[in-house]
Amino acid sequence: MKAVIAAGGTAGHINPALAIADEILRSEPDSEIVFMGREDGMENSLVTSRGFRLVPIDVWGFMRSFKLEDIRYNLNSLRLIVKSSFKVRRFFREFEPDIVIGCGGYVSGPVVFQASLMGIKTAIHEQNSFPGVTTRILSRFVDLILAPNDDAKEKIGRPEKTVVVGNPVSRAVLEADRETARNRLGVGNRTCILSFGGSNGAKVINDVAARVFIKCKGRDDIFFIHATGAYDTSTFPSELEKEGVSLNDLPCRVSVYIDDMPDCLAASDLVVSRSGAITISELAAAGKASYLIPSPHVTENHQYFNALTLSSRGAAVLEEEKDMEPDRTAERIIALAEDGEQLKEMGIAARSIATPQASAVIYEKIKELMRG
Image (cartoon, rainbow, N blue to C red; front, side):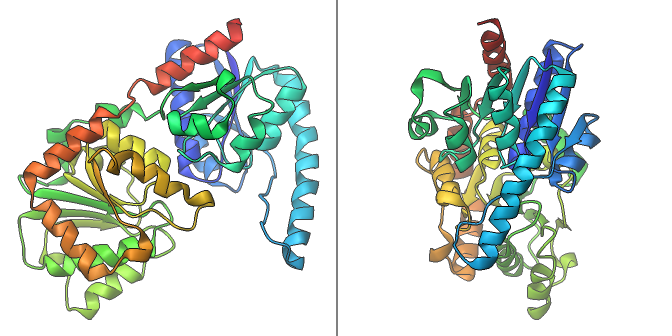
């Protein structure tokens, strides 16, 4: 198979794309797979580090206001789309792909649209329960829409070509062993709380994690794994310092990024995080109880709807940021971590909605499309 995959912007778009690419290669080792995305985007490092080729295109998103500076920005975005469209068409003529797959982010727009205009088979995969703008626009032109759940399928509004497949999760998450991971990380028999706010971080997650650390000072029965994220590295240590708390006061591992997320997930008993679509899928696949704080700064408040996928089934506690008070939230997290039976029940509920075969199902649907 010769496939082009377009994805960019966030790991939530790029990681599913990589999982799909891995499944194609697992099933057809001789396949040629090329990614398209921004050279200065996260996709460049994530894709090339996995050994895939990235063909760079220069595309910007759009501002949703009518301020003069935003109008200028949007006009330049249109110019770049036109320019990148010519580059995409030239590449398609040279590479002659059998299929073009969009996995989200505005970079998917011109890539998938040009493929549709050229008569190349096209598919898009949406990760969120509330579909993004790019998905809703491309849904009119593509041959196949791959949705994460029934809610997304209904909101996309094109049931005749939409298939519910779930979200693909990396094999590393699916195959990580709890005991091996806990031994490697030094968790031992302690309850393990994993907290993070994404690769860039989230101040509210750092604030809450700091309050949990402070309230657990001197305890040895809880092991903490926390990632501050790249954009908010100061909040967490400064909050601890104010209260005279050192990282040596309790068993923990604190870092900017989590590079070994499969092991950290496997080792954890409770996860405190935002509710991006892939985070939700990984929590389900790993069977983990969670305390979810959706980001209110996303399109259509889609993280709230993602979180409902787990909380409505008793697999997560959902608290909106507008209702939060760090000390109170920290107390709730600690109380939940101390209730081993509830954590087990929530983990079982999470695993019940997992879609571990999503990558394989997506591959089969793509093959059906190519055959049909």
